[in-house]
Image (tube, rainbow, N blue to C red; front, side, top):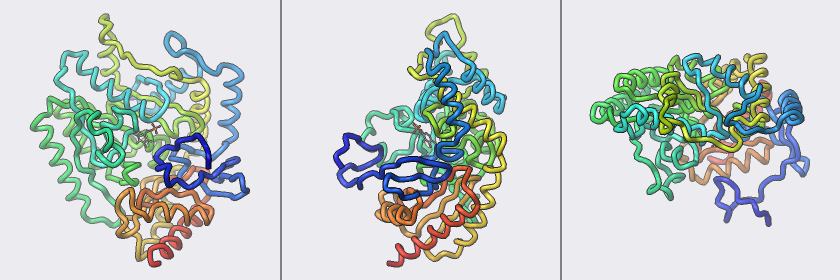
Length: 426
Ligand SMILES: *Cc1c(COP(=O)(O)O)cnc(C)c1O
């Protein structure tokens, strides 16, 4: 196709012609040629309530007719104030909120706040960061630095900040090795902290679920133990809840499910219900206070032209309204996943079945790695059957919109079982 569009995460030389989408409704997308496709991954994990959700669409339209945008320094507006109050109200230990416009910038803000926090207090020796192997925190340079070194970061290695990585203790259903993996990861972390604890500004973690790594899941116990170690050495804790926020893990936020208390928390993706780019970085009071000073050098010099965009805030408020009214939708999905995963437990080619709230994943035996050729082949077969799934190599995962019905979820799992049987044995 002769389009000027250079697509994200796409080798354009081999890219199949993109599918033209005409409209969306609930979990379904309608293509220009009339085909119906069920969106089982919430269009890159953002579409919380389904496509074109009428209440959110109406809230945006009403806001657009009143105030579409205003400079965010020196001015504010009702939707931004109310949204900030409601988000910080849900996480009272994080009473300050900084707006930006996507997950990468939410992480960038968290990274800069943590770094400058120490500098403002004259503890400029705390310059390094800790992260988890396999992490993904976004594509801007700071966020990329905090991400696990991989094919994605390889070309930019020389541009990245120094970061030390701790193994991620992955867990799955029926797994018996997790305790040992947790112990080893914590030992590794403790070793780093004992050696150079005073050099670290913060550790960033994707709590409970590492998204881009292939929906790898860990237990709350690991997050709790890591937090104790980090606190002991005065290292700040940043949670990247860009994926896990807003019900994805079965609770409103993963930190609540894990019963942990980060100092900084990053939100984006589902924040606006998947309608508009909007992000927020929440901070503990102590961090905020370290920037309030008579010295202009203590100011957080960061901002974006669309900071606290009123349309995004209005969409987010409407989305929150839906989440609160229908929270059973994200709370009950884990049971559905478990029932379906149990049906696939004896599948000859599937292993490491796992679930956390609304997110589930399974791996095709012997197809490790993001570039494994099976990924695109499976994606094509799923699409032919009317399902949008985007395996990460041999990892098939589901991140459905919360409007998905029980029977629809059953149909996705049946399709997965059949397609994997056909593709792997052939
Ligand atoms: C998607 C994602 C990001 C980056 O968000 P963008 O809006 O794509 O910049 C950061 N962290 C996590 C955990 C993500 O899943």
